[in-house]
Length: 346
Ligand SMILES: [Zn+2]
Ligand SMILES: [Zn+2]
Image (cartoon, rainbow, N blue to C red; front, side, top):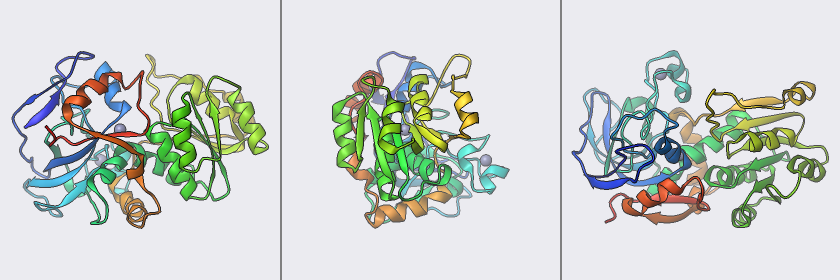
């Protein structure tokens, strides 16, 4: 099969032929029809994750099952499927309790194993992790859920419990930020978006954001307090930096809820936070890490009905070779919206 191979950290990626995988016990092999290019792929490429080389990135995918391993009960060849980027073991207390997204024994395609920037990918513990795609939902829309849309969905529903009429401040209008805007608007919330680039803010306004603020031009927290009359109920840092996390937390009103989605890799694992404000105003600091397969059907039914339209966040569909040149630049020049890869393209 053709795959995008990472032979060394932070070196050019190469698209070449490698041996195709076969299905392990309990797992399936999926022919990849669509797979999203994400800043998390860039984090793996520079070495923020512990990947074994040579490596194949890619963790947001949808496709068709082409091989089924021994012991798999729920799946057959030809099924249209997707998968959360965190795959649980299927056997621990967290998986059995419906929280495979925090399984201590988790696998992540494109991180702990070869991923979906290839014609085929292996998905383990398929009965726990694989999700059926409704007939009315395209492979591209399903792959767009991958990590960013599903993470934004869970951040706003399962974690922050956003209510209609509440203010949400979303810092960062890339794939996950724009997903949060679309989902927030669908939940009846009023959304403020902060980003460095006017084009990203235009995209946010098209999705229903009421106010947009250019990062770096003014005091973000003060501007949000002014707009909302005391701060937003919910804040989301969809970028992942000390500055954006701080801006998001300080934009909250008393008893507000912050959800951290953007990854915050630092050498010692610590990030400064305005804890004096957190205590005095009783703020909640929440993390969100993907979404378990058992929680997908509710979100998929909202997509099937047209209430949520992740496919509208896709800006371009490209082949593996073009993706190999784009991935190393995801840090400096994260393109607006989502980039989808079709590995079957020449
Ligand atoms: Zn588990
Ligand atoms: Zn991702």
